[in-house]
Length: 453
Ligand SMILES: [Zn+2]
Image (cartoon, rainbow, N blue to C red; front, side, top):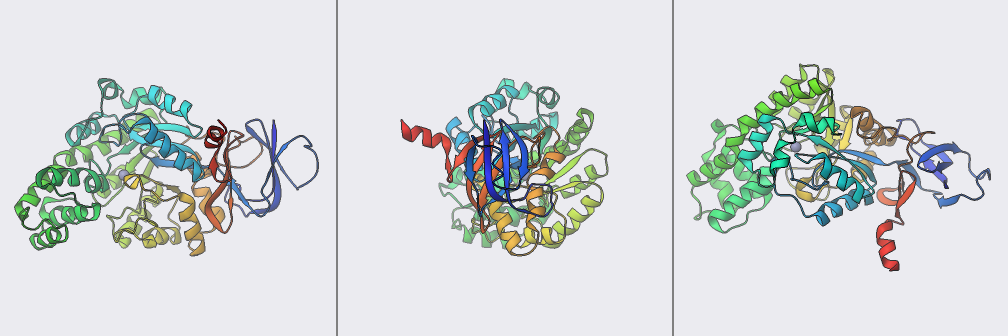
């Protein structure tokens, strides 16, 4: 079966200038050649008309949660229902992502394989199951961890197909986003019956423990103000809040920090990359790992807990030591969050610090990678070919087991590609995975099939 993607402008993932008006010829699951249009060599081919459209490689997303059937997050939270995992994967697919690395970290190889079979997106896993990371999960949560999950060590996971260790540390075990959108609101609701928002919980957390998570950062005035802002004045005292926040965040914190060094050492032994939670709270430990010779990916180096200056200096220091600097889109554009604007992301691009682009989870509300690339290229902070490479070939090269022969549109590569609108990059029209069309006219092909029934 031959398909010709006709007349497109091609950004092939290698970081080089676009080619105008070419045909991409796909044979079976493979890119056969890229040719000048209309040479008539494939009369019986299926044609995807892509004139005036942009074709790029399928995106490879190295930081996703809730994309495999098993415990959610590196805190071993209760699994999402399968249909929600499938819906998350559908969303990634509609956004042009054809390979995801699930960094929940406690999912067995068997469960990852089941997910991968159930959905057209390629699903690969990272493991965070080292002793300290497991301890941190059990202290924070662990509610979704079965006996089998706990026993499935990082070593075993790598032997059975995990391509990295990660996410090591997380917003759930290190007092980051996961504490703010999940565990703090839960605990406050349990005590008061009032459900606070993520930003209210975040303000309370920072008032008690600061951006770097330290008991010495306690600021009574800031706590009073945060209580007022969260509508909790009169329901909780300053010392109640101090106790709640400390009780949620601190017990696992030092254990999780220890997990960073432990997992990095284990990744070195297993000869796989290690993806770490890089945020204000973990930056010192991340820097310590950077001094070792493990292949280190500093996940979401644009984390909102950093100040702009701090993030740029830290990333530059890490990059000099060979660390891969990842940025996560989170809900930067559509989240409406006062603490998360595009400024830091754009500054990282402009400084030439970014190696890879991922989404992360943002409580399930991440923005599309292509929306971020659209905005960043329009802002002039990164070129289109460079940005596309950061979400395709650079990710494949960083994680050798994640997407072999993927991430570039060149002869012999696996035919994962996206046809999208050059003036609104996130308006994805067609997605092909291994030569099969999975999204057509911006809709899942699986849905078309069910309409026919
Ligand atoms: Zn994280």
